[in-house]
Image 1: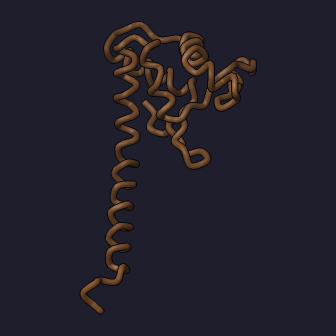
Image 2: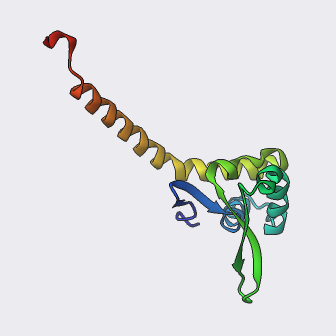
Length: 132
């Protein structure tokens, strides 16, 4: 299993549909369940995000496979990648959430610590009403 699947791009945590299906299948393999195909995930994404695709808020990209052929893929934010619950079997969706929680938790903890530090600094730099 890779830990570098979620990358920071333009200030957002992003995962490709190819990496996402790889991660889903990692969990499915551990539970001895059949693998999810990348083309199946692409269909789900196209259906779930049809409005975003229509207005180009989400665009289809490409990668080259092992035969050097151009294949479709999407880059999704972690929030987008969690969204297609209605279209995924419950076990697949739960496996995705496990992955995102594990990869996002350290980032969220660091963000909360940073916010606490900023708030504390702000409080220290705000003049007290008692010091008049």
